[in-house]
Amino acid sequence: MIKLSRRKLIVSGLTATAGASGLAAAALMAQEYGLVPPDHGGMYGFGETLTYASQRLLTRRSLAREFPRSRISPRPFPNELAPLTEDFKHLQAGGFADWRISVDGMVAQPASFSIADLKSYPSRSHITELACEEGWSYIAEWIGVPLSHVLNLVGILPQARYIVYVSMEPDTWDSIDMADALHPQTFLCYGMNGNDLPVPHGGPLRMRLPRQIGYKNIKFITHLTVTDNLKRFGKGLGSAAAEAGYAWYTGI
Amino acid sequence: MATLGSARLPGEAGLPSSVSTVSVTTLPPRHSAVVRVTHWIFTLSFFALLLSGIEIVISHPRFYWGETGTVLTKPLFQLPIPSSRRLVPTGYTYVLPDQNGWSRALHFEAAWIAVLTGLWYVLFGLFTRHFQKDLLPHKAEFSWRTFWTSFTRPLRFERPSAAEAFSYNVLQRLTYVLVIFVLFPLVVWSGLAMSLGFASAFPWSVTLLGGRQSARTIHFFVSLALVLFLFVHIAMICLAGFWGRTGAMITGRIGTRKEHK
Image (cartoon, rainbow over all chains, first blue to last red; front, side, top):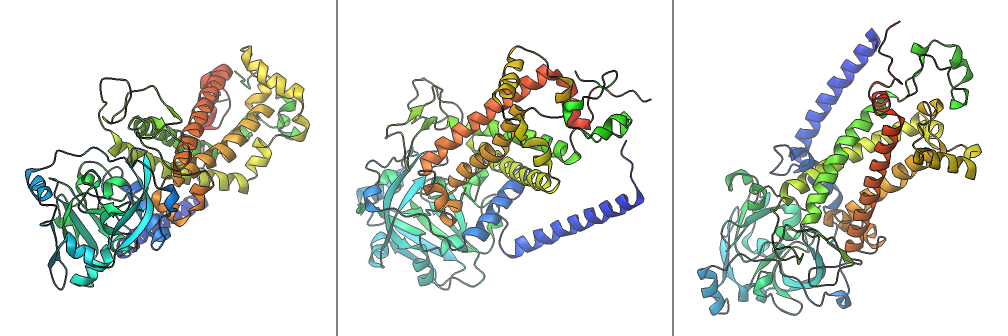
């Protein structure tokens, strides 16, 4: 039998108290510094939070790996698309000239932009890998306007914490924190490998976040909302994917 | 099973000689409390990782070498199993249901628990000289004869000697060292290399493994090696006496010593 001495009891009691208050303090700090993901509840919340918090501390400014032009994959694989809606086909018939992306929420000046507007801003490109959660990956050149450029145009308010982005596809939306929204490699992407972004890859406009998994790189973007609180969107988990059981943060 | 009831304490077991004069109940436990607790937490997280890992592989049972790979490129090999994705050519007429949401969540949560438990164990092992005392092979043991006997005895279904209830033989030591210090670090590394966030902070973690798809393939084979270890581990425990060995890893005591004297 294990004999509990008084000394052992006191020591373990103190350790447990210190541990519990340490954890509580850590939770408060994590909340304060934006280290808690919106889908932090439930059975997997512990893992999601550890991953998000540690990667935020490690990767706030890190850049996704970029590749030389010679390593662009000759045949980029577009994943399965849901059937295109009538609205989409109508815009497609017009060469997407009437495609608009509107920006609202915590901004000084709500605005909406056409693809031509976006193309008139300084364009940026990076040759990065798109990796799917299923396991496959390819390298492509992605061309677009940094999301931060558009956010500067509309003037985000200081209390902004997340950008919600919505697709034209039904029930398809996601969100990112400001570290990702202002990251230099985060694009509103309208081009790929020197051409317009093909429809199977999300053309005319997709979100491109090379530090996160493919499904976070939502296709057919039509709407951005700047917010300080994700609770007001859907079930409050931060994305349609999270409501379907897929993690909100996909840096892993 | 090596019970202490009648058997003399084995002299070759590496126990301090003074032990043989000490009453049995004051013997140090076969496995220390930290070893036992970390062993079972690790066991649980290992099974969670295995189950969720298999689930994730089903969504793309093709493996590649280098940086990239999709269904449009030639795989290194493809597992002959059905897939949970319609666009993966498998030769099966049906598509399995998508389970990747919870599988990925469970995989990464279990990975956190496994890694933190592993670090606890390794720090403890260094601190208490557990590795030097119990796992690093002794120089004297490095002979073909000892290798050969410890390898062939279980193949002839011979039960291990009583001494081996207290200490590991040279082959066991080498295997544990390989699993703890080579295979586990490698499976964690190749797993982290597949994290886009981690790779952005530590690009060399992917480049050194030969690219993202190479990392995934390495992750698969090291996992396979760990499963092989698990089978041999369980087979050896069954050979030595399942309840005795398992009991020792739960209570820390050897054999069936429930009786109070």
